[in-house]
Length: 126
Length: 131
Image (cartoon, rainbow over the protein chains, first blue to last red):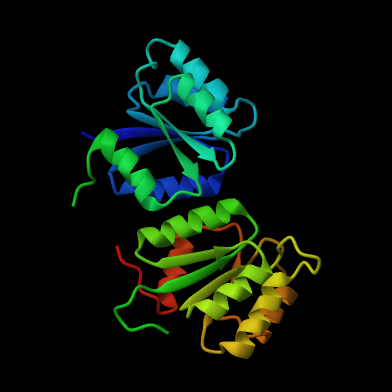
């Protein structure tokens, strides 16, 4: 079954990178440019299987987004991966305390992200 | 340069962390060995230590001159004339483009970066990327 991933990040370049990564897993990607956009996209795509969420974003940041999603019963069980920045460990810990399933720290290697996705979705098709 | 079957080695020089992250991620996913630098001096140090197949350098970094990428290009042409160099900029003009080619750039790339397009360009320059 095709997996659907919501990516919440304010960088168009980061979206390009995730697209390349997730294509290998034959995922359908839903893109959002901030937390509020993420909530809107989630309402339109309630069948999302995983979310990749940046912390620093305008309008609604990643922590506010996680808090909001976890308060909405219909979305609370969807795994959230935090994409954090080196030196911002406190934010990562807050995100995990709010219910995120895991995190990757920028700058990350392909293997870091792949092993997290593998854990959730299994290895990509050969 | 390395042997034919050895992994290709690329140096990326840019002061934007997102550029370094996304390009190095994309290239490492294609089995390229990547080294990154966000300033001129560490880039020059990396060049002394490694034999690169390609250098991708932004023109404007956070130094005083505002054209560190072109300075790096001149340095590369002086000591490693055979190394391919892609010069990138978000502040381009015909004059800047001509200056880059006059200094020996292999390719001039106008930002914003499109990762797929840049990967295709790298392959066109004779650097094979694994699928």
